[in-house]
Image (spheres, rainbow, N blue to C red):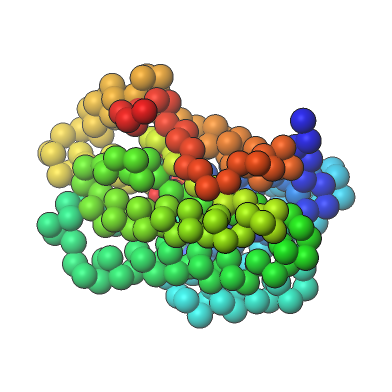
Length: 261
Ligand SMILES: NC(=O)c1ccc[n+]([C@@H]2O[C@H](COP(=O)([O-])OP(=O)(O)OC[C@H]3O[C@@H](n4cnc5c(N)ncnc54)[C@H](OP(=O)(O)O)[C@@H]3O)[C@@H](O)[C@H]2O)c1
């Protein structure tokens, strides 16, 4: 099975921590030249230093805030003017939590901009290079809420569905160029995002974070949270030559938590 990414450029968004960071580490281990993108320049510099480079890889970073359309456009055009990106991992911070009845119109607008518009800007910029390479892997990190809406994540549930529909539409248009588009749906995964969601829930319920955690774990057939590396491994497979005939799918990596088949 060919899982080598040697010589390929991979743009991994939201890669200073959590699932994005774990993905960058796995892709670098498979030989990819990693380009990291996020807001925090100090963290980006630190992560670049941590990535494997024993296959002559050259890693780099580009600062961009996904809530600023102009910043994404500038960052991606700087990159695509000098290199062809073969792998794009669309990932950024999750939308604000809370019930949908309390969401403001501006909450939907900002989540739509950061998630869907951001992805669209990146994709349209990398597609010409992928077509020239005859190889493209677009992997969107979304959420299991694509399969079943999650409580207290009103804005997120709404925007995630839009991203999944966008991705499926895109996969139909670009498959003939040997470009695949897939979604990875993480379940409850040990990252800063999960910690902040548990803290918020504990505050709302006036309970302890440890109790919230116990109740969450009870909902998972595998009886534990996922690790960022476990999500990254699935992303890495989709990025590899081995996943050449997988497109238009949404893959749950959730320890069996999502109730539907
Ligand atoms: N962890 C879970 O249990 C879980 C479950 C389902 C879905 N997800 C989703 O999976 C995605 C990744 O989750 P995670 O747990 O890895 O999140 P995380 O630990 O909060 O990491 C988010 C990453 O995105 C970057 N980021 C945040 N806001 C950004 C912005 N405006 N512009 C550019 N970069 C930004 C952060 O870097 P900077 O701060 O340096 O910008 C960081 O590297 C999120 O969409 C999350 O909602 C997570």
